[in-house]
Image (tube, rainbow, N blue to C red; front, side):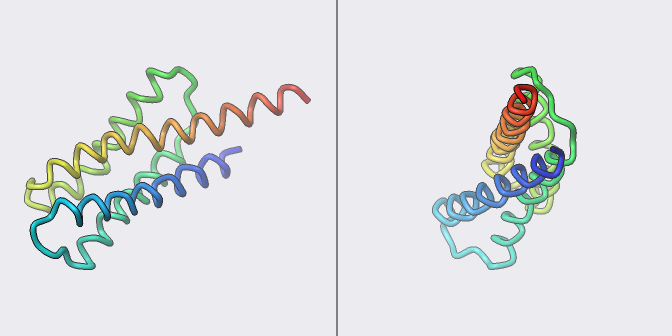
Length: 118
């Protein structure tokens, strides 16, 4: 069950990382370097790994709170590397943390329900 949680969180992080690249490219006034865009994507993938490694929580408020906290902590590393300039990226990281945690918790919850019916 834990392997599937990690996989869901990792894939969610990778997909949201692509959305981050698109969003950063659209809002930037100048061309962004490949290294910068890769770092943005990798930060979201790392967020998925961190969230996926933790055990699932079932209470919706705890899911959202833990996702927001972990999203903030992981995104803060990237935010600090930008000289504390990319506030939008930090805010997106908080929201993406909640989305990744929600997806991972929902998948784990559905799996646990289906096993209990057998």
